[in-house]
Length: 287
Image (cartoon, one colour):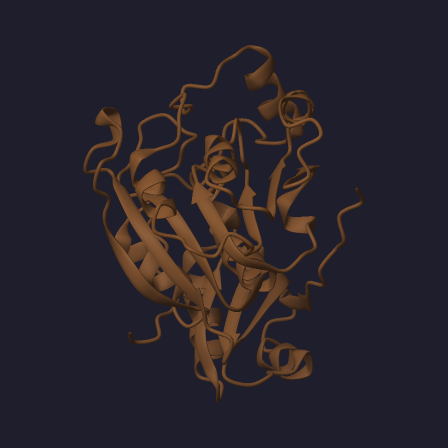
């Protein structure tokens, strides 16, 4: 796959309300969970049936009612971590899985989670995040996966009139994940729920451990034209493989063959005094 600059084409790039802990907690308190199928999705169930290593470490972010974890436990998997930001949901999960030592339930911000996993299962988490967080999602997934670890599950291949969920496309995902992951498979899912037929892509992404994936905060970008100029300049640096700027122009994902120093990036952007770039360090989640 050819390296690509930022080509974000998501149908929605901003939210009318903050999608924070209060928002999601309220949705669960009011039982306003239209995304919940009430059972594990068919494509993920069939795929889990092909997994052989019951001891591999598995993470499910934005887990919701986590029918996936329930099914994994029924199949004998022994090392499952789930995380969600909604306290009322997490309390319910802890009661449901009380005394089950094969599952670790975490309340908190996924982007502050520390750990190392063989496999991460994506099921309606990506689409629940504001699209501006998509480059950060790629960075964090790369961080959390072990060498040769995999990100697998479902992404929507459609747009929505009302969000969340936020839609996307195969073309967008190819650009977004390029070089940070090897796209082993990304095809229309089989056996989707009736209301999601032909609207889901089943993905199997393998972490590319040969490339470095770094993340930065940037200030001073105010329009798509400036974004294209800045990402273009960074892509011209030796070793740069993929550059993705968030849709609110505040963050940059940089995938490279070798470390590109912050000093080089700062000098590159010094032609405009408004621009400032700083590397983002990982923040630990307090459990």
